[in-house]
Amino acid sequence: MLKFVKNHMESMEGIATYPMISLLIFFLFFVILGLWVFTATKNHIKEMSNLPLDENNQEKFEL
Image (cartoon, rainbow, N blue to C red; front, side, top):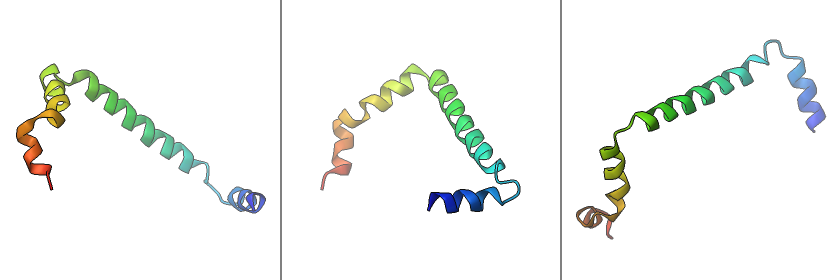
């Protein structure tokens, strides 16, 4: 089965561009995410980390 898929993929022109595009998308995503993490303010991070423990917020999610 894998031999058939490999043979079929090798016959397509320009098929090598798709893995490069997906690698570029994932790389850019993680670089942007890393930049956001390093530039986020300490107050915002502290507020988001305490959000699950906030008693006022718990009332919204109780069933």
